Amino acid sequence: MKAGFVSLVGRPNAGKSTLLNRFVGQKVAIVSDKPQTTRHRIVGVRNTPAGQVVFIDTPGIHKPVHRMNQRMVDAATGTLKEVDVAVLVVDVAEPIGVGDRFVVDLVRRSGVKVVLALNKIDRISKPALLPIMQQYQAIMDFAAIVPVSASTGDGVQALEGEILAALPEGEPLYPDDYLTDQTQRTLAAELIREKVLTHTRDELPYSTAVVIEQFDEPQREGGLTRIHASILVDHDSQKPIVIGKGGDMIKRIGSEARADLEEMLGGKVFLDLYVKVRADWRDDERILNEIGLGTRPRQG
Ligand SMILES: Nc1nc2c(ncn2[C@@H]2O[C@H](COP(=O)(O)OP(=O)(O)OP(=O)(O)O)[C@@H](O)[C@H]2O)c(=O)[nH]1
Ligand SMILES: [Mg+2]
Image (cartoon, rainbow, N blue to C red; front, side, top):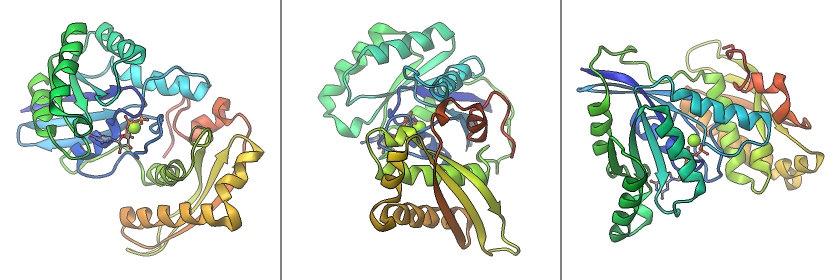
């Protein structure tokens, strides 16, 4: 049997979280078309007859401006010291640029075995793939290069095969019913944030955090879960955008998040959302702690 830790690393928006969800077979990481969606590490476990792969999804590597972004990048690069294999995920529909070379350098210097996942092959023509493979081959000696589409699932089995081949022999690290390290509380905050990301644009996705103020579990099986959450924004001018005309935006965010939460929790959910202005929260240690980016380990 094979077993080990595998981090999914790469630039923002490459498709790391989409790939994690596909491997785990369940949504454990939120996904959006905006870069910098993932802000903390997310463990997702894949059990196969050949062994157990403990994936660690990480924030996209980018040039950090705020303290939050520095923590995000540190969370991603930090995993390289702890894993048996890194999967470098790149978007083949984007030309190879400075950012890609930076990330390749980073994984090369870490000394860890690296499998390259050329993601989003559904977005390019077959003949366009070969030169991209050759370009990457020329800049680093990868353990394997596998074209995939995290969206369609194309090539994902081949990628899993290469990952298992690169992993050491070992007994499973987690029980076979363990899927993720994300608590329901964290998943709830993330699902709400996903809806904000989906429906907003420009600076807003980057300026938003979700904090769960209260999470009351149901009194009986299948009963009502009561969740009170705050959507934090950076500036006064952003608050009316999140609330929308006559409250239509916040209603939409709330009802879509509630539907996802009810599916996740398998019962009815009462969801109460507030929008709060917290200037410079991205540099505020207390808020970073609450969203899992503090220097202390997260509680609950
Ligand atoms: N066409 C296509 N789109 C994809 C594929 N994989 C991911 N996407 C899309 O790419 C966008 C980014 O996906 P994510 O999984 O959030 O990317 P990420 O690498 O986790 O991004 P960060 O968390 O910001 O670092 C989303 O809109 C996905 O639906 C793919 O194989 N094909
Ligand atoms: Mg992500």
